[in-house]
Image: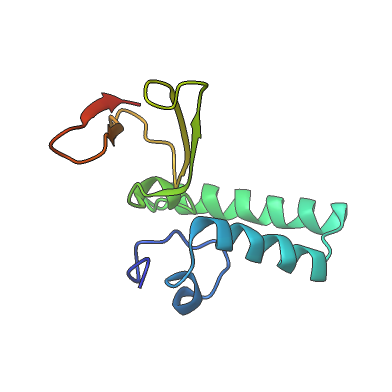
Length: 122
């Protein structure tokens, strides 16, 4: 299981399915879903208004509304590594984070082994 139940933000993917998917697979699932279920401007505005009202009512009664992604654990997906002309000394690393890390520091461990590598703040 890639993502234990309850650790993935609810984005519309069934929970049992999302638990087995990487972030890239979840992105592809949403794209294919939106291709099959077209969203008109009117439907988007109607849904946005309903979400805004729900968030407003939720906060008026002491709830947190619909902002749940900030509480999700920070996970890393879609890692990409690129090398420069000298692969022994030049490296570019990129990744997708599941949410904005905010004040949380993100570190990158690199090297041929943990004993022969180092750690950088990303």
